[in-house]
Length: 365
Image (tube, rainbow, N blue to C red):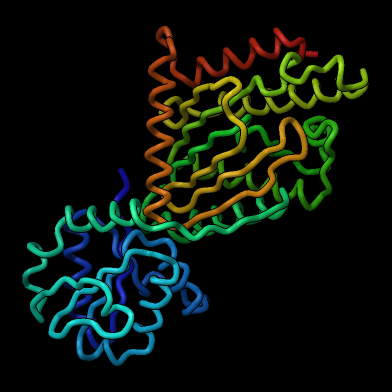
């Protein structure tokens, strides 16, 4: 599905060996990560830590030189602290310190036997073991603005820094309307007030939401997107409008729902079939899941029909992100199989369904 990103930790005195290891990793379908991808203006240690956090596997070359390197020892400790699976390659002596607690792969000092000790199955076993046995480190945000800022910052970094080395990042979202129901227009455009209905946002939050829409669309245009949505979440029956809201509030909710659905339709209309797939799941989506490539995943709790996202958790732990992708893809394919498209693409069928919802709910004012 996705090639494994393998961060390589080494002493600079072992560069010839690193080149051999890099070529071998590429030959078995992995993507080596190391400090040659760091931009000149970046803070070196910060970017190294970031790359380690995104790696599926951390490999360290254990040589006489690397065992004395404070950088290598720090990188090993950082990887273990983030619960990234660590795989030492011992060239002449077994690893010491924290890495000594981990079973090392023993290889000859010239790395001539890598094809027999570091196979695709070996890499897969390391990742699958991490999926079963390691609990991912999670970060949590409480407010919509903090959640959106974190998503935008990570998604922009991935798009601008990493996609050119590791390929495009597909977007997967499981939520009521998706990022693509957020307007692209400037934040002082009347469409924002219409969309927000009873829950008006300040300019800073609107700016962040607009940035979320724009960066998600950039990723979708490169890597495509799969969406599991519930466009019925604000239907009259589900909201029980007549008993809970005044007539003015009902009208604002209808306008908000219409604006979100029309914005989503505009996005789907603009996308080619090969880059977007959509399925609907009425009444079964209680929160929000958002996965960018295999780089990071978020899951949020949403109070029903009000207040926006609450308690959003984030993880960069790559083996865990792969597990979430597998679960999402299985669910998507099951729903898609149950859908009778009658010759239409899922995109075309989704547009037709969304237009029917607008009509049936009397939202096309």
